[in-house]
Image (cartoon, rainbow, N blue to C red; front, side, top):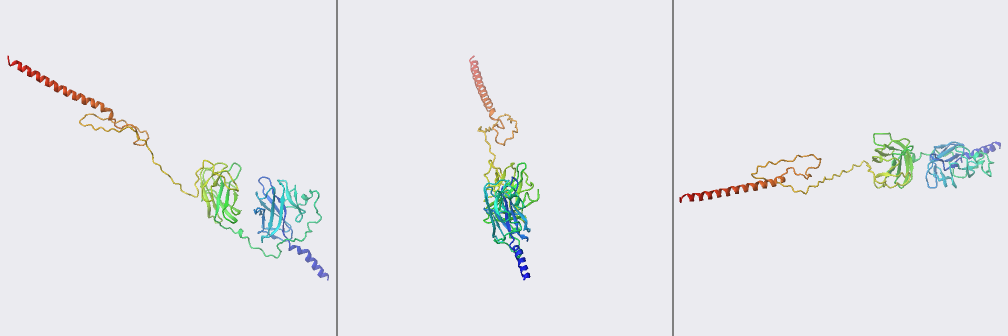
Length: 415
């Protein structure tokens, strides 16, 4: 009889290991600038829990990244995010590998970097807004500041039986999540790129998922000009359907005076790219629409729809397209002066050409005549007139002399 009682006691003591579960314990939604938001989870059992397929989501369905693949017995786990949790209230849902909701926590009010939302007592107590952060640690110290003090009579080892769905210890090791295997997708575009940030800022590339489903870009790459410059930068992003996500580069790889921005999948196949020329500090190169490959200089619009092009719009070479060169004819204005060509017959006049000057103009547009024939026309006419007059005078003179001689001859005969 004593043996049976002992066996029953052992079963009662250790039966709660089967119901060990991950729990929400603390939420920090409004960190200082440059730091991450975080959610603290806790494994309330003495067995390791595989949480590689667990999900932590806000009310809008945005994921909060869990930092580890497993939760140690009676250990804390952190999940971090950037600009996901609202500072004026939100709802956090924890789901297991079967996508069943394990726990939900909702906070409200206005939060700043000095406030946190935590359970008092830890793990199974009520939620309170506290002024003391207990990251990766028990909330007991922070809970003591509450007035009235919340009920803390149960010790940490007295944990009530969990009634929500949990993973039994006999559950076989789950297969790796499908999203952990790198995949390639179509309709993934470079939306915007900050290639020339202001001093102290980092370069970044905004990517848009133009599909009707979420994608996991695991081990994809951002690169500059192919086989030149810097090495490709590897990254992983979760992007919801018809949504934006940004990869912040840890070091600069783009040239300010011309380069290429390329998006490669995990096999380094090109999914999208564009080339650019001169840039402007603090401005981005943004796609004008997802139905074209045109980019232009824009005001930054990180994680949101792109702004309009800045005028005047610079010329951006996109997707290695060859620009067409339009040749326009050179126009010349001809002088309205008539070109006079005089052909001289039996006239012994030497025509002297003008000195030619190289003015750098198109041939045929000068308003000067190469041979200045019209300037000698009056002289030629004058000489012709004088010659004719002289001939007439000679003829008249001869006739007069001839008549006079005849009269003289007739006068001599009568004598």
